[in-house]
Image (cartoon, rainbow, N blue to C red; front, side, top):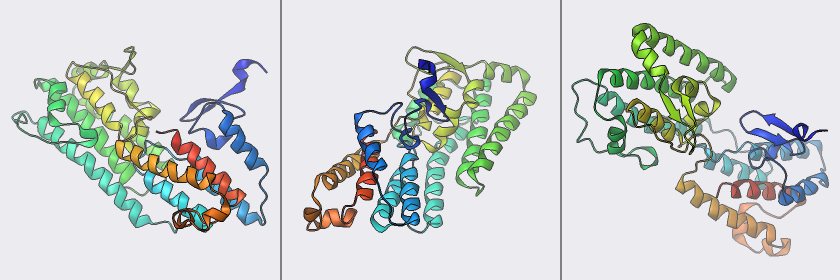
Length: 323
């Protein structure tokens, strides 16, 4: 097998080594020494009953699906810890999930409302002092957009229409993810056609705007950005703000590279992960007899078993990747 055949494309994660087990795709491109040791533990696991095996692999699948850049990641980690400790997942709390979605939606509404106010011809936002996601302030928005023009107002309105519809699709409507992916493409296409018909000249200028996508100033057009997987992902990502800043900079004629897409983690998450990683390592390094006399460790996962050891090691390795 040639060197190029050793890798396979994993949707959303790029090229990965074929011998990398599926649930490490959110951590590495190829297995390192730690991963190989954890995989060996998996190979030696024994399950008393078939339902034990199913639950164990459901938990491992959930660990493999964690994304540090998703705004719900802390909630999902806590569900996994609960499942390891109690041998079952907590009942799905639809109310909590809906509430998290609403809170996220509201955070974005704040900046979108500001941009809508900016896009009114006679409005003055120069004295408006607000702070948005990631600590971005109104001064930064105003600086990127520069002096108002009819074209800029039209372009900002176009971006606002897309983001509002996508936020409602992903965080308010109750469709399945597969249905949402299909609807998203239709939404973007529908809005593009609408604006192209409204003003073909402005649309041509808008579709030609370019955005730096890396430090070397590799440029892509707004048209390309709206149709990339990364743009979609960032709706659930605090770093979506950087995508928006890049677009606003392009509209204002001040396009600069801002780190985009996944791979961006809030400081609050890093603090949470550092504390949790220390606890997980302590659990893994402590003998079982000592665990039973340590209330904190017992509350975390209970007595250690090989199955728990494998799951906790997998979780610790995964979250440490984000620090």
